[in-house]
Length: 403
Image 1 (cartoon, rainbow, N blue to C red):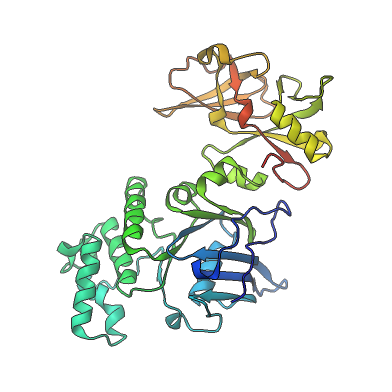
Image 2 (image 1 turned 90 degrees about the vertical axis):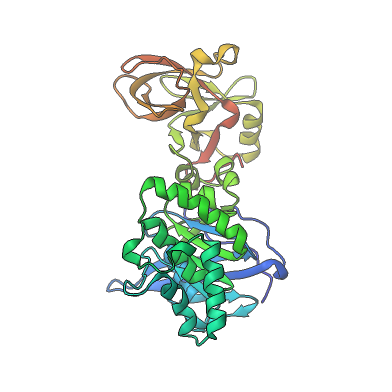
């Protein structure tokens, strides 16, 4: 297996941010220049476009993106359920691209639990081993160990109809774990659970992964799941890798406008402000209604970038827009704007404000402020922008010039 760098074409920019390439000894799964085209009457649909990712041994990697971005197709290709149009899949230093799913040493957990309703939990767990003719004593030992690991030992004699959704999910996980595969593949396994149980199962999945210590590739469209579960997260859009890195890096340093708008809740605001030079050599972001001075560091970034400042869009996360009345001396003319409060959504620990620059509402943006804020709907409010957290995006490529 050759030592390749992790790279791919991006939908919004030619610059895709990934981690540095790993040594072969650290790599458990290598997705190498993978493309997948589905034939149709119009000549074909490109589902995955030149995707390359090196996945470390024991890593929990999450593939995330909107519907149709290629994440499930990628997972199914690793599993052997889809044949690559181009590219190779390596597992444990072996090219498995031409192997059947059962020959790849992987186990898959689907969105649908696919438990056999006429079998008990014990029989469901032992089924993958029985069809492979494992000795009875080894089957019993693996089933007992897996049930103890997942804390479902007391459920072994029940049938799926007598289990809750969370219990059924544990049994589906157990049926994969009992095989002791090299790689776990999970395709939105929590999507059928209610919101509270999904949060609980995210925690349990993290704990199970730490105990099992196996490489896991996990697919979800839910960015909250991706951020809380993944050691690293790969953001896909239109079949192309946008950014690959630790969750906090994706949040703090989104490489392009797509990642910035996808990661984070509420999503990042993109304000139609003009970036104009100042007489003293700095810059400010201004609209007809407000202006914000760029920090010295951000102004230096614009200079280094060297393009036309007028072609930049300002990005700021809702949590970096705060009630100026609560900011004290930190609120200054350089970082304060006035906006019309259209809607207030109390969230307990925060208030979400839907704002517009004027009462006419030419466009809207969001602020996430303290619950102590006393701003009111249908009134103007003074807001402080954390200028150190502002981002600038190239309108043509979508590239974030600040990272």
